[in-house]
Length: 441
Image (cartoon, rainbow, N blue to C red; front, side, top):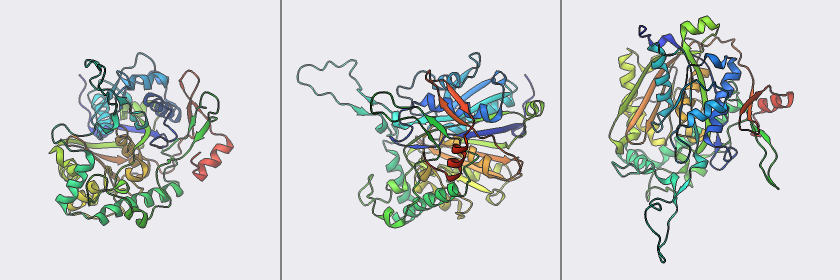
């Protein structure tokens, strides 16, 4: 066995993601392995890596009802990664994207692999409906049968609370008001809209070709350029009109909850030695990871508990960090973390919006936070990404930027051919113009 490498000896070469589609939106007709295949293909095309050099593919995906035995395997095969390459799918609820990255890094640190593609994919629009128990219970002549929405199977079996009720519990526990929750939701949309307008996401997101709908009257194929979830017209007045769906007179609404969405992202990582050998310049390296558990009913407290621990064990403080990305499963997650850490810096916290505005495809959000830090931090700066998770978990990572400020990222557009294989193409002049204008379609 080779000597164990340090975290900083594993580097991120490049990573990118699809635009995020809203629930029932642009990506609703694409299943999870198709979206994931396009993310992997995008990274292969942007970096120019020879697929034969890839040792392993790890992709996170959490809402796995009906998506097959190992969706990550389909993602890599439809992306053109050689069949000899192993792949596995990671499920750790919202922290799954960070765990997939952590597993790939551990493999490289141990010397078992040198090059990996890692990321996450989720299609929440395709969560199926279920007929639970129908296999063994005869219907008889006068019995009803109930179709259950698979999306609603979110209650934790230990604490018997839905995510929305845990968010309300966090508000009560930390004394959070409806106004504070609304403010976080509003800020998320404002930050995301400004970031898209300012071109912050231009190097992080690649457009995708949406295939034409089959059959008469279907839509023609088109190209999807920009996240479609955030609201350019968000206002506190509109937020305050939304009813609290989880609890009477509650503090949590749709405006302070993460968006139900579809999307995928992937990164190319390798040992620093291999990167030098292949002539790649890293854009980031890794400092540390921390995965921890807590009371399931209090899972929104995860970031507030875990961020101080990982900073302390690396002899760092919050002042040493440029950006802190806390996944906005609910506004109460962010507000609780601020109170628990006795810290308030909204310019440093989720500076370009979070998943209230951008969306939270659960198996993919850890990959998104990683990619965003890698593309927005300047060389030498540190960033923290943290996600709470249903069942009482948290995943946290410290990343260090190594990005050359003059580095340019290849512009590509990715799609699927008639056989479902992912392809990449260079943007046309018209595509480039639409990308500059950040058109949705």
